Image (cartoon, rainbow, N blue to C red; front, side, top):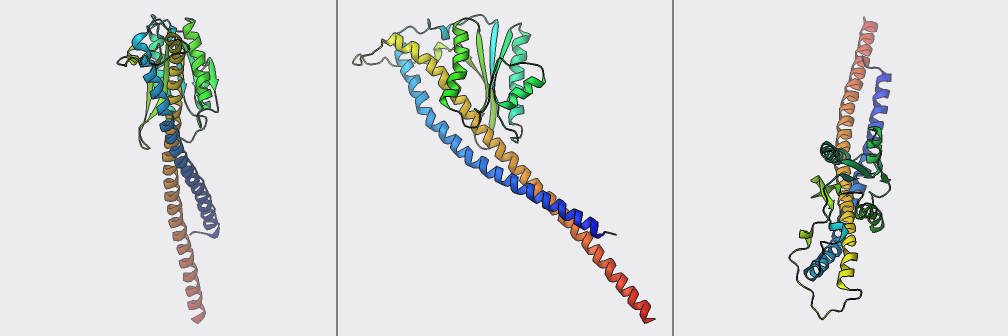
Length: 292
């Protein structure tokens, strides 16, 4: 027979689950609003990246770009892998998926006899590799939620400087590409060396333009900015993907909490009905005993 103690315990559990449901629902709504802002930032950054690419293509027609140190192709012996994860959890399989791609990239490079330097963006990635005894060369935290151009420049400058000094022969960038609110795909991109083919097909800039500094010097300055723009784009895509993954995870948690609360309510109602039925039976039995 269900007692008052069991009913009180069920009530406490229902209140606890409903409180959790309110929290996950609030987090879902926050993540949804941040997705919109992250998508807007991706769209706002796109014209700059496209324009700098077009300018480099125009300059590359009349200037030799293959001599730039960031375009120099060498036989890989030392490789860097930049892994873009989040600072916070509760985002479903977002971090696990991108870390799988990073692990596979590291494993492929090390199996080919190359040394790998690891750069990690996000506390979750840093904790993951620290637990496995792999110490990153550098870690940046507090970047993933709302990326900035300055943060992208800091990341890009480190690997560009080492690549130009021939300390690195290849740089991979692992991040999550935002396709839609339902689809985010972890990808890896070869950040360095920059492929000269990326600047092909441009139209020569009109001689009516006067360049100060010279076209060649301007090209030397723009190629690093192009690399920084690619890093910034990856940060923005990962940020939008993180918020989308968190929204889905919190929606699933909210739905599960509602289901658990409903099940507990049914159990409590059945227990209460059993208690009421027992009490009525005892009253009726007592009345019959008195009447006889």
